[in-house]
Amino acid sequence: MNCAMCGIRACKNGIENTPKNCPSTDEDINNIKDLYRTDENYTIAKVSTKLSPQQGKTRIEETMDFARECGYKKIGLAFCNALANEAKIIDKVFTYNGFETESVICKVGGISRETVDLEATSNTMCNPIVQAKFLNKAKTDLNVVIGLCVGHDSLFIKYSEAPVTVLAVKDKVLAHNPLGAIYMADKYYKNKLFPPKE
Image 1: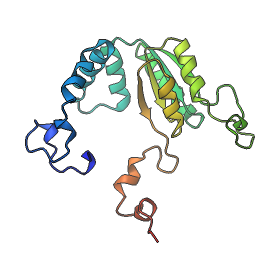
Image 2: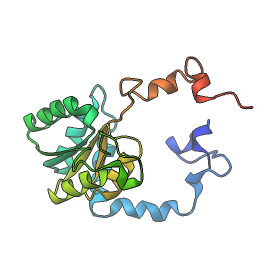
Image 3: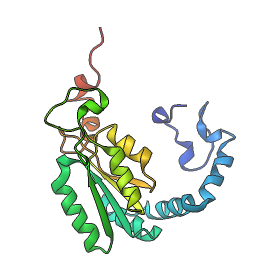
């Protein structure tokens, strides 16, 4: 299967003229549909599907709409030290709009890089597992990722008991807009993304 390279997109408007090996024709699809009818999956799927056509709203507005519609009141913020100022503003936005917040910075616990067999430096390593564990302990309804590093975000999501959404991803070069590189993939970033092969 290779949906990224498909030019037909039969799945978008019904399943006709599907290309060979299209996952939409897999017999397991009907069994998987049942998962959308269970407990929290149903609520999340229904609310996100209902809200997805909205136009003219920012990601944070959409996140608040989603949380309200799902009945989530306590929001967990898992943020990167590099986005501490942004996290402070985000916290204010959520609380002003009626949500309770809990927030945990990536450097929580100040653990050494030696924990993962790297040389110790004055800069402690990020601690996404503890971020998730603390928010689990606080019994948050929804956790919001703000700029966690690649991989650290994976660990946070893996250990979070509450559903997770991403408000911001870190990209130090492109002002936290990683798609900037994709939009310039055949121009300025061509040699970086497609380096010449020997």
